[in-house]
Image (cartoon, rainbow, N blue to C red; front, side):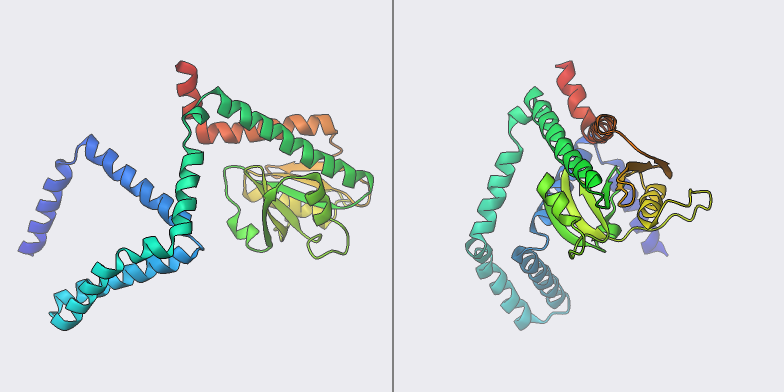
Length: 283
């Protein structure tokens, strides 16, 4: 009991001595480790990282339990093996440094960044709408879910990963009848087609019109559990509808939908990076 009190007293003393600089320092280190982990995720380097962690734990345990021979061997392996990852994973390291260089340009913090984003946004929306209304004219059913701030990872895992740029050709090809990906929904995240042929939960509402089929009910259902915006193309009528916050809005004109999508994406983007824009405007 005395040792426990001593532990908490020492812990309290350490916490009281932490300054703002220490907090900032820890946040920076945590962010760096997070970015490294995200970069090596699902790569060969991830397996190496796991091996290094296991090796470090085994080294510490062998030292604690005084397994001198094993400890000596593990220490020597760590000493010799420290340089090996830089040789084995030289292409990945170079790609990572190039990625950092491309994404930390000072000019990206200025008005050019906003201008490029606006251009990419308009281009992506126009490509998406060209596909949507082309399918509507041909009465090809389609279901496109555009993520808000709430990630839909559990939904994307039910489909096939695409991770491609939004183009009219890609969207139309996905929904061609009797093809492997046409049955289900497309998930769009950060102006990219993330996944296709995804299964969505159906709404349980009883007050919906009888002429709304499974595709419309799925579009409403996903909008009830997230802040997404769903575009539905009816294969019976060729009409375009949208669902948001559990409500459906039918027969939406192309120009109106363009404004809705642009406002939706701009608000989401501002929520993520609004502090940068505010800093730019003030300076």
